[in-house]
Image (cartoon, rainbow, N blue to C red; front, side, top):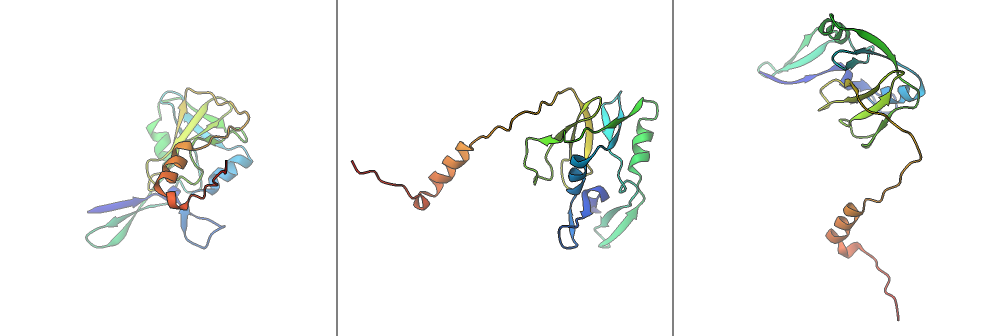
Length: 172
């Protein structure tokens, strides 16, 4: 009985924190700093970002014996085999093109970035999955930041905690 799977690209030792398993945050920081190569299948619109973790084994927990089972893994070879009869092209990620409409701390957010040829998105449904990449039909325009007040959330909090509000009373 399999309880869960751990994929090596989902868990990385992060140097800014004590030695513990932490979500793969530093990949984003490196992307902002320089260009990286992505493999893309132009027929399926799927893409793959090669990392050093692609050939790390995957560990499954056996529910009966409570032990981990190590399975060989090669993400890059799987991608190339899946798209062996398709046209694979190498894309270069453009510096500082990374953006998201979600919080940077949200591990399962969807991100967008620009390559030299296409706009791509990346996402994962949960932390145990590797990041997925796809060519999308979109254009990213970078401009001035837009500041938005979360008025609905503020109103909801004010109504939920009226005793914490300190309102000035005006004297007429």
